[in-house]
Every structure is written in C-alpha cells, then in structure tokens.
Length: 424
Image 1 (cartoon, rainbow, N blue to C red):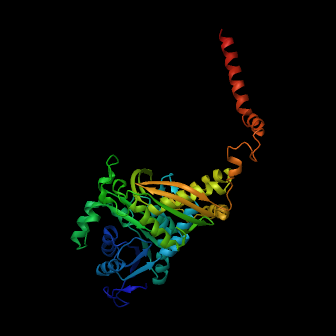
Image 2 (image 1 turned 45 degrees about the horizontal axis):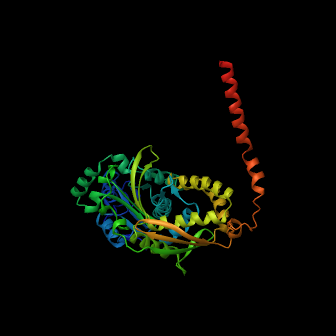
Image 3 (image 1 turned 90 degrees about the vertical axis):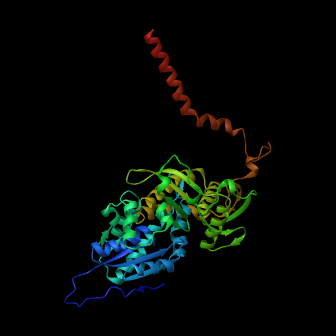
C-alpha cells in the first residue's frame, strides 16, 4: 500500500521556514508510538512520517493508519511484508533451530531488521533526517533498532524518545489522555508484540515472576485444562530444512504457519513462561505464545537427528546457538550471521522428510519420522542376532574408546596409594 498524505501540516514559505526535522517513526498504533508522534512534534518541531510493517500482527492496519493521520503525521506508510518475513527471516530461523536460551523461538527480534529495512527505504524516498523507535532503555529492542539503523543508514540521526524521556508507563498513559490519544484497556494492562511467528506479552502482573499468568494474557492458545479432550496428529513435510507440506497438503509458508498456529493453539501448545537474560544485563520474566514455532522446531530438530551424523548435529548445535544469539542481540547485519548461514544451508540439503507429531492438552510429542536420507537402519539396530551389525567388534571398540579414561583412573589410584604410603 502506498503512502497516505495527511495534508495537516502546512508548509511555510521557503524564506520563512527553518530547516525542518523529518523523522521516520516505526509505528505500531499502540500507546508508546502514538505518544511519540506528539512528543516528536513538540520536542523536535518535527514532521513525522510513520511506517507500519505488517509481519502478521493481526491488527487493523486501516485503523492504525487513520490513528496516525489523526495525530498529524506528514505521511503514513502501511507495508505488507508477511511473505518476505516468512521466507527471509522465519525460514532461516527454522533451519537454525532458533531457540534463545533453549526456550524461546525468537520472534520479536526476527522482525526488527525487516522493519528497519523498510523504514530506511521510506527515509530515503522522503529525504528524512532521522529515524525513531519507541523502545525503552531497559529492553532488547533498542539495541536491535539502533544497531540496524547505524549499520544500514549511518548518516541518519537515531532518536529514542522513550529512552530519552524516561517516563513511566503510568506517566505515559497520563500524557496520552492529556493529548487526546485513545488508550485501550489492553494497553493499560500489558505490552504486546506480535508476528506470524509468535506473540510476546509483558508488563503488569507478569512482572511478578512468582505469579501464574492470568488467562486474559493469552489470545492464541487455550489453557491445557480447557484444550480438546482428543489428541490430534499432524504431519509436516520438510524440504531442504523448511516446511512445505502440512497433513499431505502443499502449502505456502504463511498458510502453513497460520494453520499450525490455529492447530497448536486449540491444544494449548506453545505457551512459554521463562526467565530470560536481556542484553542490558537484566533478568526478565517473559511470556510468549508460539504454537506454530514450537511444533515446527520440534519436528525440524527431530528430522535433523535422523539424517545428519552425530558430528554434524553436535557441531551444528553450536552454530545454531551462535546464529540465534546474533539475531536476538541485534546483530542481524553482522557478517558472521552470513558466514554461519553458509554452513547451516549446506547442512540442510539432506533435511528432507516427514515428521508426525501428537498434540494433546499442552503436550507435544514426535511419534514418527521418515526420510530418504535417513541414517537409521532398522536392520542394524533390531535385536535379532542375525543382523548386519557384528557384535564381536564391540569388545575391541570399548577397549579403545575407554582406554584413556581407564589409564587416568589407574594413575589416580596409584598416586593416592603412594600418598597414603608416604603419610604412614
């Protein structure tokens, strides 16, 4: 969708006009960024251009656009980037089994470099002087936006009003009401970020790490207690490490992810509650809903174990962890990510096959897998004595495999005895 020009801010005659700040703001339509429009106008005397990038946040983009125009922005851009997000950001994350600290399927962090990319294009088209975001000085997003801005548009000013303003959420709501900015009940209670790959929920009661999240914090998943009483089986086909078919039906990435969000959600799969290490040194209690991501990553990891050697799996786990950290830590544009992806993409050439999973009452279990590249050989592992596996070889293997361990312990025992003899 193209730009919508508000026409609200009149241009002065060239001789009367000072050089105006023209700032491109990442706009979600929520409390924080709505307040920032007014703040930038008042404190920077700026012409504000808002950009909303649709990565699957399931919000009314027309309503967001109208809200921005009502707040007096110079232009507003609504950009549909869902397909690009799925193909160029989510799919690499699947290949890398991207779970931050082994728990969270990174979703929020994945969308930030894409949003920045679109913002910079808008800034270039409008000859903007600065780029702005609504991140706080306590979170990770400030790092992601700032580094991405600086990497791709080093000549533009970076403005982080919330960090500069240092206003509490209560003060922010008060300011919004004073300026006639509509504040939703959800905004008063939680801070929410969504994409096709996950939903994060923060603030309010959730900041008490010892309290169970209330049900009104969740939208994509039902509680396991209220989930369906009958288990459901799903089958996911992977090609070169990415899902291409669900339950024997070929699907485009967006449709497949959306379908699994629905299926996983109705079975209570994908709720995540954990203590997370933020980049700025804080421990943070984080709540996420990631039904599709949870299902797909579990299936992908299982298939990799079937087709890759133990050496590939072990080495790739380290590569995956480093790739995930770079994406989480705002270093998407660091050359190392591309270096790591070269290995990851090579490893995925054999990750073709199908995985069956069982979903039930919040639980997720792989119950079957198959691949033409499988290293699993039933004829070798079955307990029938007449197999292709020569068991007599095991004795010599064990002797050599444990040789140094055996020698180390013999030496340890000898030193211990010698020490005891000297003492007596």
